[in-house]
Image 1: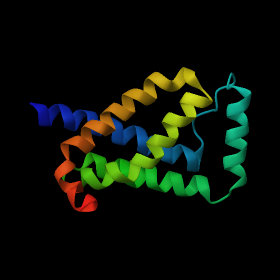
Image 2 (image 1 turned 90 degrees about the horizontal axis):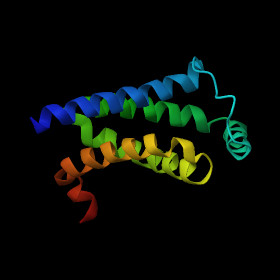
Image 3 (image 1 turned 120 degrees about the vertical axis):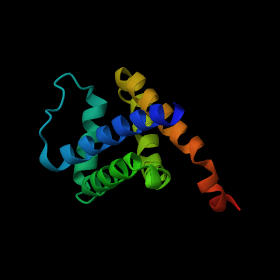
Image 4 (image 1 turned 30 degrees about the vertical axis):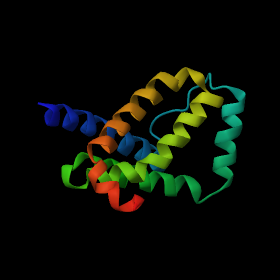
Length: 125
């Protein structure tokens, strides 16, 4: 039962990150009109570094796909981890209204990583 629940959460998590990555390329979701001014400055700064957003998008798409596939879930989670930290920090300091969703996504990622902790053991030896 635990594996089925984890698969459903991993599927939704992976699809959300794939959607976020694809949106960075195709921009099919509009930016919110009521975004805080300091958040707009962050978006403009990221846009000024022309290679950054495509890199993040590719990592989100590949990581999202890998998180869905049980055999590669640990690799996908470790790829998405730094992006998730950035998302959390962004919502803590610039846009607190999105923090509940960011915390839920972080909890899912933490569960995936804890479930795959044996695969990460070699990195810490």
